Image 1: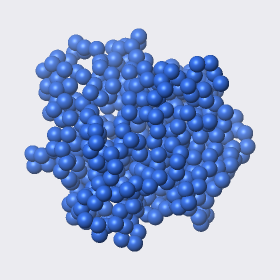
Image 2: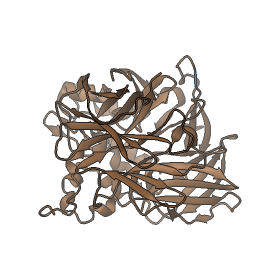
Image 3: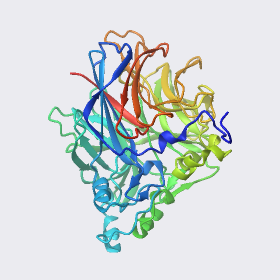
Image 4: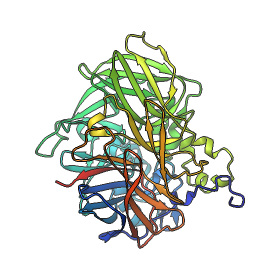
Length: 505
C-alpha cells in the first residue's frame, strides 16, 4: 500500500494532465494481439485537454479546453491524432494568454474588451453569453460530426483532420437556452435533444427534433416537438441525458436545479455557472413522460432522491416502462471533479462516497396513478459510469447488456471496463495494471446475431506514463482482450470523456 494514500490503486493524475503539443500528423500504433480486420473506421473522442492558460489554471474538470482524439482503424492497423477544438473561448483565452471567459467552475479575470454593459446585453443572447468550450461529447448530424457541451453552441469538426470547421448557435434556430450533451440519433438518422427554451413567455423543458436531411442541413428544419413546465418554474432541473422509447420521451427531473435568477445575476457579475446550481435536499426525483405523438406531458412518477448524469437505456414492455440509469444519492460527484478535490482525494476519506454511484432500474406500471412512488432496484452493486449499449439496435428497446467504466475510486482495480447483464445482475470486468479506460463503445460484428456479438473499443491512458495512449479492442461477450494499439505522444495525454465510432464507408 502506498504511504498515506487512502485509495492506493487510483492515480488521480490522469485527470490533471494538460496536452502541450497536438498530434496533427497521424502516429502509427504499435500493435499487440490482433485488431480484427473487419473493424474499420474512426473512433472519435472528446474531453478535457488542458487545465492551463498562460500562468492561470482552471478550477473544475469541466472547464478544461476541449481536446479531440481520433483512432483510425484499418486492416488491423491503428493511427492516432489529437487536436484542440478551436472554439471562440479557446481562441480568446490563447490570444490573451489568460482565462478571460468564465466557465462552469472558474471565474475569468476581467476582460478589458467586455464591459458590464456587454455582459448585461449578452443575457439576451444565451448562446453567446456562455463559454462555447464543447468538451463533453461528439454526435453525428447526418454525415457531419459535432462537438457538444451544454451551452447551445455546437462545433462541426472534420472527422479525418480534426479541424474545427463551423460554429452553430442553436439559440438562433430553435431558441434554446441550453441542451443536454447527449442527443439521441434514431435509426432513420433523425436527431432529438432536450433543452430549455422560452415558450410563449414561459421557461420550459423542450424536446427538439432535427429531421435527417441528405443535404446535410438538419438545423434549418429543427422544431420543438414536445415540452413540459419545470416543477419549479425558476429552478428547472439540471439534465445531462434523457431517454426515448417507442411512445415516450423520458425526462428525469432531479433535485439539482439551475437558479435562473442566479444565472442572470452571475452573468452580470461574472460568476461561474456552478454557483447557480441548487440541491433541493429531501425532494423526490420525478420521471416525466412526454408523448412522442402529441408532445404533451402524459404522466409523471416519483422515486427516491437521486442525482444522475447518464441514463443507460429506457424501454417499454408489457404495459410497463423501464428506466435504467447510473444514480448517486446526491450531487457531490460534481464537487469531486473540482481540481482541488482531485488533488487532495488521497487524504479525503469522503471522496470515494462522493463517487459512490450505482446502476439502478425504475420499473414503472404505466397504468399506475400519477405520482406513484417507484422503488429503485440495483442492477448490480458495482460503480458504473459512461454507460453504453448496442445503441443502433437496442436504444429505446428491451435489452440485456450494458458496458461502463468503474466509478469506484476505492476498488481494487478502479480502472476497469465493466459488462453488466441487466437480467441476472452478473458482472464481468476487464482491467490492466495502472490503466484507465474511457467510455467503452460497442461495435457489432458484420454478421452479428446476438446482442453482445461484437467488440468493445476504448481509449486508454496510463498512470505511470503520461505520454502513452492506447486503444484496446475486447471481445464484447467475454471482455477478453483481442488486441491493442499503443502510441507515444509528444506531450501528456489526458483522459477523455465521450465519443462516437464512425464506420468506414
